[in-house]
Amino acid sequence: MLSKNKIKFIRSLERKKERNESGLFLAEGNKLVADLLPYFSCELLVAKPSWMATQGDLKAKELIVADENDIEKASLLKNPQDVIAIFVQSEQILDKSLLQNELNLALDGIQDPGNLGTIIRIADWFGIHHVICSPDTADIYNPKTVQATMGSLARMQIFYESLPELLTTLPDLPVYGTFLNGENIYTNTLTTNGLIVMGNEGNGIRPEVEKHINRRLYIPSFPLETDTAESLNVAVATAITCAEFRRQQVQSLGYTPI
Amino acid sequence: MLSKNKIKFIRSLERKKERNESGLFLAEGNKLVADLLPYFSCELLVAKPSWMATQGDLKAKELIVADENDIEKASLLKNPQDVIAIFVQSEQILDKSLLQNELNLALDGIQDPGNLGTIIRIADWFGIHHVICSPDTADIYNPKTVQATMGSLARMQIFYESLPELLTTLPDLPVYGTFLNGENIYTNTLTTNGLIVMGNEGNGIRPEVEKHINRRLYIPSFPLETDTAESLNVAVATAITCAEFRRQQVQSLGYTPI
Image 1 (tube, rainbow over the protein chains, first blue to last red):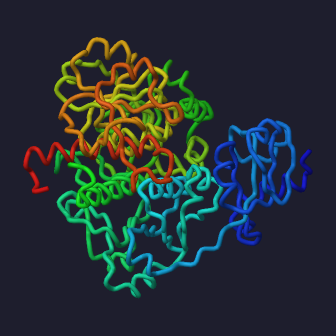
Image 2 (image 1 turned 90 degrees about the vertical axis):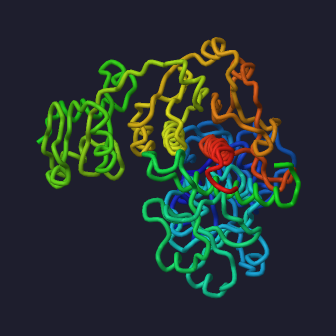
Image 3 (image 1 turned 90 degrees about the horizontal axis):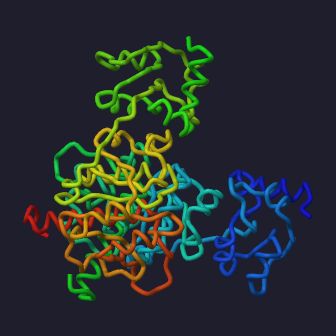
């Protein structure tokens, strides 16, 4: 049985202020919670016995056996599942040498929590483990974002930093962005390290970030110069861009006979 | 001034039953409505004078000048804009010869209206003009779908058909699908015609559709065979797939020196 106070506390984590003050975040769903449990310290686990029975040892500071009614009251989802968990946010410290040696992603003012979560999932798929977000990007611990990452959150390191300040300290880094007047991504020889910057849904990349971009790319529509959609959704553009970086990398390594 | 009845009628188009019975659909937003007006017959246009002033001749059966308050009452959006329009759904008749000669998309049970709209926008970007949806795919005229197409709806032909029945009549067509055990999309020589089938968000492509798929593809994660995200969002997978078909097509045409 879940107390009113507990329900109120769980639901309060929908708000960034409460998440920041407590250093906690919320995750829901049978698979998502199971995926996150090995990676994040769990403060509170509220679950039906049926879900608990599918798990091994459960490591949580507090464990509450709940019924349908409890879960429904505490859940932020339209279709609540069998488990709700509160985890401790992990603190990430940015190691700049990783930026020099690997391919990474920077997000300049992504507003939509769902887009952010989808982008994290894409980055994970393509083996990109560091995402640097401008301070005004949506909160990675927003429950909608956590949900959209589909567990990828566990494998990612996500930082919030001023992008212009960071880029000023990395003058030699290949910094990529996609623009309608960029160069065809398919005819560009892409590097295996560097930073891919994706911009805000409506306004794109800010001028103070754009000036640090030294490789301007374009995802060609088909056929070129006909009347098509004016742009792609930012998560979709991220996916096509990351896919092409990795395709070229695999090709140049000779893994596959492209 | 918008009557209570008109507000009720506008809002009723959120429901499929009312859309089907009336043959109408709803679109909102300054740019979206302007984009759709040249392509769809407009039954009702409710707009602020400021928006009307930005348009030329407005062709609508009924035009109502509205204020902020009217728009807010009638709108289904969180952040209503300056115009709401009701359009007549267009009837599309499938010409099977188009399936033989062009590259097209089939959707097998896509549930999320936002995913459907995003996929329509992706198809438009990549010059794919025909999308065949299984009868249980989300409704293309769902307001959330219309919104997510960002105007691409105007350039697309969308059909609802039984996919197994359709595919039975097209035995020689290259029919593609993405599977975790498919062949690497980058090492496959993709055709410039045929059908790309994308499956349901949770369950993928149905067995009765899968048996008609003669080209099984896989989008490789990076690096291969490491612990990454388990799958990609269906719109994201659609985008990467369509991008690769068009990249290969452009390359084989010799447009660009890849």
